[in-house]
Length: 66
Image (cartoon, rainbow, N blue to C red; front, top):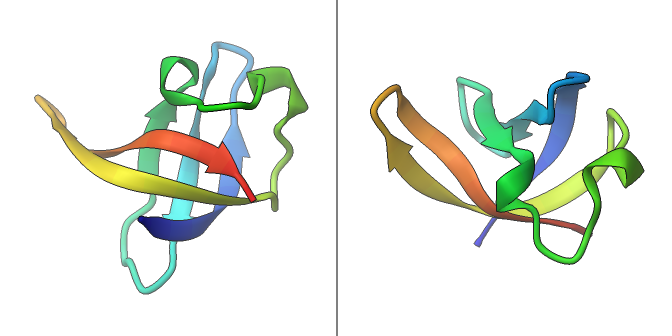
């Protein structure tokens, strides 16, 4: 399980996480949230996640608020 910080959210149900020790931000979709609603997330929130692969590269899956 990785940890990181939400660095961006959109009104279309997705956002970006800056993982600890990672150079690139990871995309996540609201479908990948666990035990939290997208509307309850704010920029700067700490989250845990796993890294999955998509056709566009790595993305965050199983995202939970700490």
